[in-house]
Image 1 (spheres, rainbow over the protein chains, first blue to last red):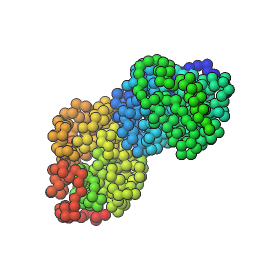
Image 2: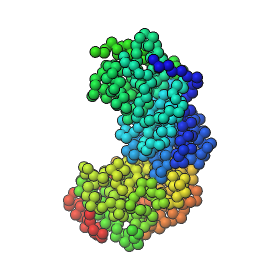
Image 3: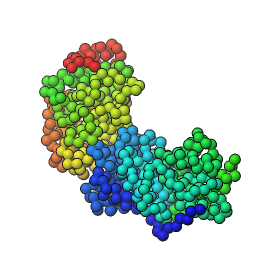
Image 4: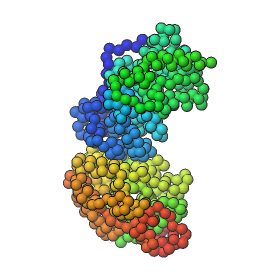
Length: 318
Length: 281
């Protein structure tokens, strides 16, 4: 097992804030919109640098999505910012018609995704957003795993033409990816090569997968860990290659087991190379208030659940 | 192509023929609101707007228009074709399989002249505001126009947009509401009354005007007046009274023709009331 260490923890939303500022410096067409959550979305540095390229929308997310779609007509590259719940479920039809169907170059940037939003509880903890967004034709869906990757992803989507859903989170998590990485949309990242099982993880669960891999290595299990930061378009080649090599698969995500990464991979594998699978995901339920780590434990999303899933799926291998 | 007011009226007659023939051809679509808004569309595309039918999505340096109540697509398609965005022969394909002329306007099939999909109501004002903001950021002094149905104002997103635009001094936007007082289930007053739209939009901070949307001279003057009110810190709203089904006596003033196509006999009777002026498609 390749050794991953970290010296610092930071929130992925701060990676977004840093990436937005960098993208803004690189391209004068980049503009930012926010629905009354500037602090939460870490947009202040961008606003300080480019006050004329920031639009405060107030608590009006539907209007924000429409205004963003309009800004693209005139060549702007709008980044909208609010919580994941208000970025997707609340404005699904606006995104569907004015952004996705109209093929507008809007970057929907969503913080506080999943259970790790914590104490605010289920009203704010969306676990269905990946599913909602990946179902839209032409939508790119990205869920990076740490500060550095989120920063790189934010810069990369500014250079990519087309609607994007970028999902990140609230809590501080280890920074373990390369600060100078080149983020390639749709290209999976090989975290660790192995032969016994393929673990496909996205977002905060990538670090948990690494912790699980270390534990499993002690027991002589050689795991392959692949970071699927881009859920759509899925890196089908990487997934198939790994699944064919190891013969069993575990998917890990901070999302409902329906509609998420696991479902996309299951569909790919079942039509190409049927493979035993286990899903580390939320089991079709809403969340609740609590500390992020408490919630991840209670809802079965920490490294021990990944260890368990690996052992279970390996028994099903032919 | 810019027309004088007399030719605008002749063009309006032709566009109304197009609407009826399109809807008849596929036995589907929304003739009522299309006929009611014909004079506004003709005034906009053949007199008021500086626009380029060679079509550039970004619309930099030209006036651009957004249709929020996308179901009145027949009138939109007809004026786009007749002002040169695409061949009028393509109007025959309205609502048919493998067509760019979809039931509701869309960019998806690449039809020139369309900049956003509409149909699901209440989204166009936000989009128009965004485009107007982009023009301001680009130091582009051309204007953005948008049209909305009165029934459509029951959608809440309009009021988010209506609150945003004056507060942010989006004063390069001229929106119009087609006040025909009708919607699918009946008169707006019976379905969900809009009460005083002038007071509502004024209270939100718009510069509100009124116009008779079925008087060509009147609507041209009103939009010209609206243009003179731009650049003064407020978005401009034209509350435009129209009659659903205008131009065909048996269709006028009723919600019955909101989304119903005429049969052969009704089409003949309707066309007999509208002179063919620029040649049918």
